Length: 226
Image (cartoon, rainbow, N blue to C red; front, side, top):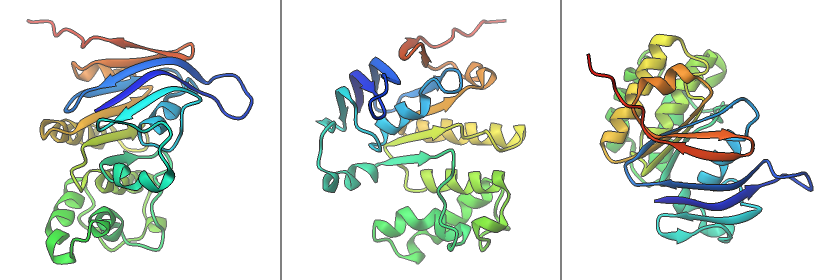
């Protein structure tokens, strides 16, 4: 589904942020992307949701080379990707309900077609009483939960999250990880960027470890039987 081949990222004339990155995300797989702050995790995610073009190498997605596609051809691909950004990127003039339903409206669905699903999802992330609240009236953790609900509501082929549990309490963090696992069971490929090693240890899934400007893939942690 997604492949980075000998990819490098740089900003301006500076040296490469990451280099020689080779990553293969198969359909229906689950990966953590981890490494210290400033290592380049967000840059890797930007490559994965087509917000950044590689300075070198090749990015393939959904069976085609997307490294140098014209911008007008990117929106249909992006609609197949659910993304949770660190800064949430909610629309302040829309309610929580309208922010979450936006991907479905873009697809042309009517309010009647998605209302029940959106309300159920917002209730599941603990915001059932906040449907009509706008982002400025919500706490940071509540805004993050709206962003996560928006990213998964259309059942994307790929779900990417940048530190999705960074602004929520541990109990809600566990619920959001469970949501990612359930989404993955439906066939969605999942990549979660985090520097939280405790979170990484919770699941036996491959880890993309970013260090020294490149990525190495670690096999799933073996569970120890009692």
